Length: 505
Image (cartoon, rainbow, N blue to C red; front, side, top):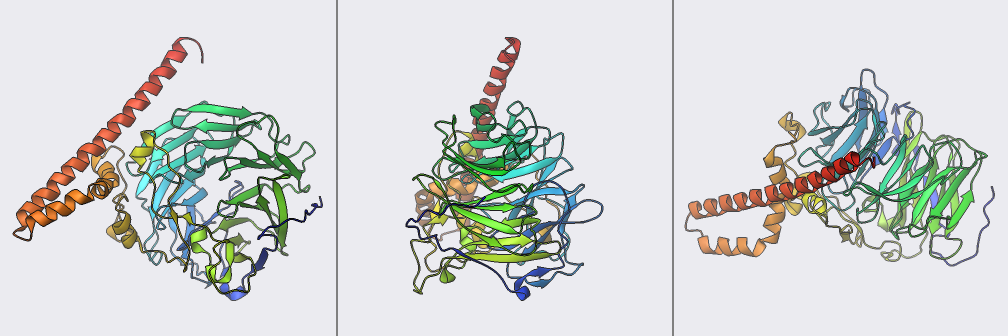
């Protein structure tokens, strides 16, 4: 359909999209031919990861973002899955950590060394096993460290604590059919999902309850997608009864009718939405399309404003969307895509032309930082918090993995590639300690500084005893958090058992 342009004031009315020159592309990348409707690509300020074709198992490529040119066939890959990889996602709190979901029914978490791989990586630092069928969707919690959601073709949603390798929540009966999409809201207190039964659901993963359901969000039978927006609204993409592609905006307070619906065209490619919470823009990238459409979401009718589209000659097999920390603020770049061709990865920059060379604060509000707002145990215990923000003024430099761990001090003890294997055992208390000890250190900073002054360099023994005591205290607090979380799970299982005995299920 042809979009009706409404003349209005917006700094994003003239967003200009431009593909990078050929010499800046990645060539000879054998993009996966898997039929699963995922982007097949994940990007962060350090690396680009692409799911590729490989015989004998699941493989994806990880390349430093600065790399360009031909990728040699001998380039080392991440190849630890026993079946094709369906989805990959970088951690929002560590640019060296990536999770992958596969047809081998597992989710694996990998630590990529700074500078990229020097040899094939076959051993994951954590392997998460809980699905009975292939796993096609993974999503990191936006604010809590080490919380990862996975959804499989067994219609089950699992929530994991990656730091301990533990399955903390499992939703078995929320979806009666194949799950197409799952997305966290801004503070990670709820998720929205769409399913083959054409219903949109809002779910509280900690209580295991479906808060709201909207039947037949889109009438068509083709796959749908849903994303939570920063203002709490939900945007969905799908198909009409006449197989026309649609975009709809929903108010979570009242799901009876959509706030806005727009019909796009009659193509059969699934529309993948990429949402930028900083600019409140949505980019729609259809698999098999040669265009990327972009819209601005506002609080004024008609709410979804079509801005423009980027068109090229070749269709895309998938696309990666770079987070705001990686864009070039000096060139007023507000977004960057990495378009997947048959054997090439092509960067596409979205810029807002400005004459001034100064930092454009209106284009770059504070964005989500690497530092998590919560620990996994805090979120499991019921706390919620929006992501911590960082300013992009003066640009953003990505810290090395070591620097990031020293600064945050809340990362799990992840084993680097050079150290050999390091699969985390789910019930190992030390894994829990590793995600909590630093937080205790941060909250007791005054106590530590006082202890340091008391030793005053008179000997190492008091300092070692102090460190040992702090470690024991941190271990006790970490174990207490785990016990509280287990008590919550036991209460939930008891309530479900009571419902079964009463015949409610």
